[in-house]
Amino acid sequence: MWTRFKRDRTGVISACVVIAFFAIAALAPVISALYGKDPYTQYGLEQEGLLDPFGLPAGANGGISVDFWFGVEPTLGRDVFILLVYGMRTSLFTALAVAVPMVVTGIIIGLVGGYMGGKVDYWLGRLTDFMMALPSQLTLIATMPVVVAVFVSPNEETPTYIRTCAIIIVLWVLGWMSMARLVRSQVLTLREREFVEAAKVAGMPPWRIVRKELLPNLFTPILVQATYMLPSAILSIAFLSFVGVGYVEPTPSWGRMFVTAAENYEANPTFMFFPGIAMVIFVVAFNLLGDSVRDAFDPKSGR
Amino acid sequence: MFRFIIRRSLGAFVILLLISAFTFFMFFAIPQDPALLACGKNCGPEALELIHKNMGLDKPVPEQYFEFMKGIVAGRDFSVGHCDAPCFGISFDDQRNVWDTIIDRLPLTVSLTVGGLVVFLAIGIGAGMIAARKKGTLTDKSVSSLSLVFSSMQIYFLGPIMLGLLVYSTGWMDSPKYVPISEDPIGWAVGLLIPWFVMALIFTAQYTRMSRSTLIEQMQEDHVRTAKAKGMSKRYVFYRYAWRGSLTPIVTILGIDLGSLLGGAIVTEQTFSLAGLGQLVIDSTNNKDLPMTMGVMLISAAFILLLNIIVDVVYGFIDPRVRLA
Image (cartoon, rainbow over all chains, first blue to last red; front, side, top):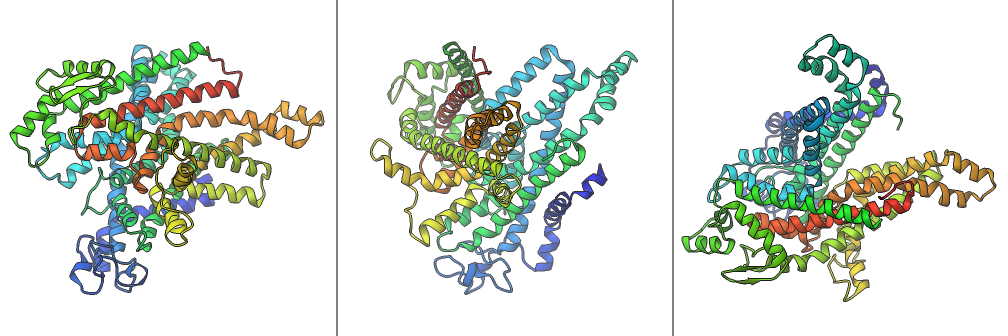
């Protein structure tokens, strides 16, 4: 399987790109130290001549210069390069923190439903159906303030870590269904196979059957599904921040950068391209990687 | 057919009931006074008292839910006045009837969603057809890779770029705006053209891919081969035999996509500053305006469910093997 993956050039390249993104996110403090700037200092307000009186970058192309590789942010005057690096860090780490519980919940609910069958399966199935019938993005927006309100009273400022928790919880609760469906359908077919029956006859306890017989066979579809879930989690986080219920300033995040960019696009189009292109590259790479992983595991499914 | 529609409508009704209960109890299950959420940072006791009265918050929660649901069917009386039949309560924010505000905003979101849907189906299926007919050529490859790139773009990225290209730098078009279709159908279409295309380009990709692959599959089917062998023209075989068969899986994914289509409409509204349901739900959640959020949730869920039923009916027309009873 690994050899098959290595032969797939698209897959290897996209894997490298994805790893590079995660490396940048993980090494953000190092990059910040080497580059000599941090994502919170408002250079444009501290240094004369970076921003014009309208709050727009004074230099050409959004203020790109030797000191500011990607230019200066309009209005707040932060450095765009380091803002993007930290924005990616926020988004990728939150997405990982979302994807893990999402995948685990999906696996558990799918396994329990598929393996137990009967009433349990029926009700878990109805629960999944219902969660899928909710208009997803709308529900995300509507539940965010509620979840935040569980932690903080409305009279106080919301700390960033609580916002992060709220984002994770909301995306988690509203996002496990596709995995549960997939796992359930796989378990349903596996359950009837001889080796599972043999294990049952031999008196293996159910938990051990699940662990030793079912899960190893489920590994591939789960991995493939998870590689599709992670980018969609990133997009959902960006979506929430873009519409103003996710991360807020001054936390650097991808979604917020698009808000600033859209507000200033007419006067300063350069700013939009850095977060935009970075996101396109990331999503394309991740989707191609998902396809390649699927092909490597299952040579029958041609593109 | 008729029985099918009735049965699906009943199912949709049950789901709506569940969604309403879910939304309602979620808001009231949180440990704080919902009125406090509505009241904001500088909340006096009088304002709090007023909201309590308006919402009938002094009663137990299940009873409040019952009152709310009864209000939708029969109307409701508040201390500030009467609220007519489809009553979703009174906004915490501007004290207006929620239903009136929704009715003001709904046409824009419906136009965006349905228009975007038509545009991306047309582009997606069209591009897929071209790619399938010219399978393996440069056209095929460029269509496929373009669709992958566009599908990885986001509305909030592509939207400003399109605005920059078509509005700011060239002045070919005006900024998107909404004109009611009843007043000026041409102005309606022109005003929403950019949002439709931006929304459509994001969604097109998977329809292109799907229609391409199913068309190629269909061309190898026995009935298509027979039609070819009978000496029918290539074009006739392609459109009447292969194309029709390729529509079924497209309609299937369309049904799945309807929910995210509404999400797409929300982002589109936000990107182009159009005041539709999306902005309403964002504003109302930011202002902690619970009746409004609740109303928008229910109405948009109903809209999505309605589209779903329509898609299923269309399904039966396209593929006669799908029995609707």
